Length: 403
Image 1 (cartoon, rainbow, N blue to C red):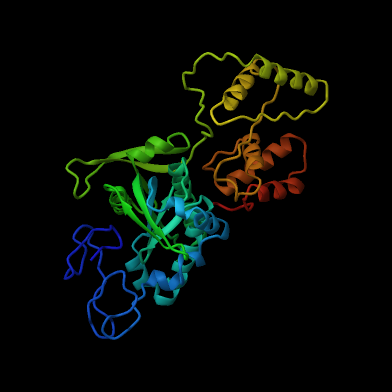
Image 2 (cartoon, helix red, strand yellow):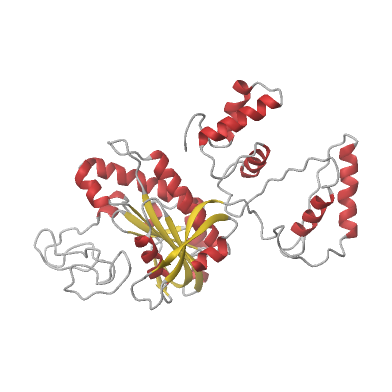
């Protein structure tokens, strides 16, 4: 019997997983007959065997997957099936959910789980991840499959941070305390199997791709996110991370190197200032066009320049060198980025510009963002009470909030 939490194969007679200790599906609640984790109805009496997560998220994956993402998967599934892909796996669950359910009761716990899944799925789908399994009080999500994305690790890390922020800021227990989750991320290969019309997907993990992610999630402290060294190497700079002591993982001879995911980083491109680059040559004509446009701007005539080219041709490098040439002049340079995962995020480049202009850091709480916006508006001689609400709404912040 396969454990739904860590994917370990256990003997049919096992009541608890030999790897992670999770309780395995027992006998039928009606007649006591044994059943497999994949069964939906009892072999003996026909009683429905639906997990709590499936009750909260009824129907096939197509029922909770955004239409645009479902269409993308179904349109290209013939090319996806049987393909080996590099993916990032995310495991997430609610901390101490068993004790929590006993303390607050079944109905409040049901409402809490429903809201938790709603917030979590919204974040996962925003970064084009797919929820592969529901695990009672948590879930497993894949980034990079079935829809291939070269920045799958970055998407998974940002989704994890968003889930933690949304759960901590929007879910509150009856006692007033904040709900906390713990997560684990790992990057590795999987082989995508068949994809049904209802988006149900079979896959085969190669090596310990999913196993290590599940182990990291189990070792994570409440409210924390642990990532493997493979993930850390792909997301460093885009997010801030800190090293933690090596994690002793069952089945591994040596402790596993892990990192704790903290906040969103400042990096937006692979072309960073601290990289050693080759000499900039061969772009005199393009550079002169930018200089001519700048000359027109300095005389009071606004200009728009579009730089188009194949990936890797040097668009970012050209802009980088042009920006560096402005450092000795009295010119204000601002930049906003369109991210590959930002198609479902309105005004993302404009938000980037505003955050840079108001010196807003990624980890700033809503109250601090509001204070920075108000202070900058006052310094510019503008009416803060009039303009701040519109800017805060554009930034997705409610004035006075702590999240």
